[in-house]
Image: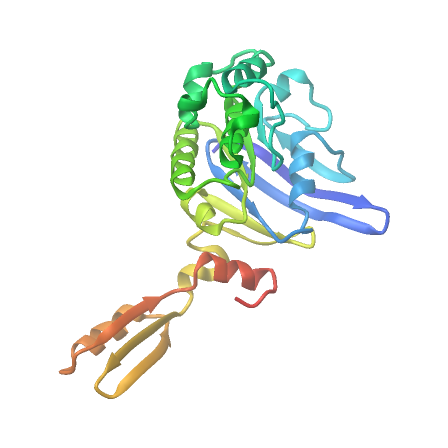
Length: 279
């Protein structure tokens, strides 16, 4: 696979504090890659270094084949960035805002198409200041993709979205990835990460503590399942790495099983365990 982002031994130090402590990352072209970690773990610093907005103390970094600390305007035109903070273009309409930003790129997408893809066609003529928080967030996403980026940074992109808007956004991200856009996602919504990410890493105290897919992270795929059921003798609970075998044994009895459930650790359970918090 072609590597869109390659990081080796990335380190960022401040007086009396190490924000990033020797990070290694490989992000493949066209994949959705999630970077998870608690506040203060080094996520934002890492992303800012990869975006070229912050200089690293040590280590190597290559983003779309160039050093982000030295790359120029042409390299930046191949990036899309959606920050946590909302765009403040209060007096402009949605169309005026997106059209204005499109002029900064050599090969922008069609303005009307982008507005439609982020679900703002009905608000295209509305001033940004009149939009709700979730709608302003959609404007941010539109500005992030208008330049037809090869690499898109998404920092908590669905903050303020209602459930329908989040699902629509997920479809947009899946379509962008299908078109070959590489996406680096940071999000506190682990259901969003599970729905979108091909791979992810969890960092804590500036270092990677686990890497994998949402299904395998931290041994999740081999974790014990909790089987709960009720019968004429009462309620029961059993932990087992082989829940299917246990359920088959239980269903072979003569009694009726009520409330049968099989539960494996969620991505949130695994994540909290990895960062040292009790689920």
